[in-house]
Length: 124
Image (cartoon, rainbow, N blue to C red; front, side, top):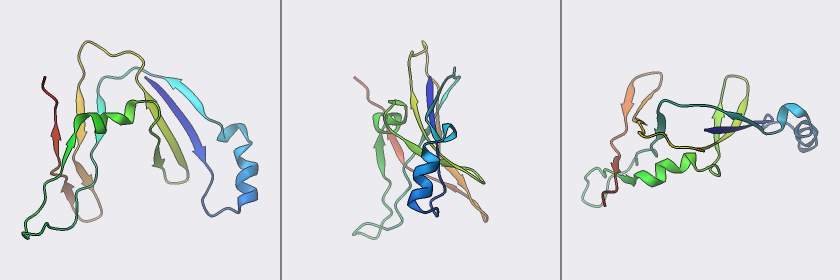
């Protein structure tokens, strides 16, 4: 897998300072090749509202749309305590077997929340 990482300047900086920082080598895109044991797939957030019949909607998402994270073009922002990074992932070679870890649980200050989204696996 190739991992492309680009450091982002702080969003509160003025435009001319951002332009100067983007010229530094620290803010240029870096590529790292890495092996993997499994792929972590992020689910879209669950809807907050109910449908017309006042029932909760259980969303469905196709497997291919959550695998788009690894197509080499889709970028995602990752935030750390001090810095923000823009990452994209590209699979170069597939192993004989793939193990998916679907990230269903999110933790906040009060409790752990489960995302009930159904992942549709194509069977042909």
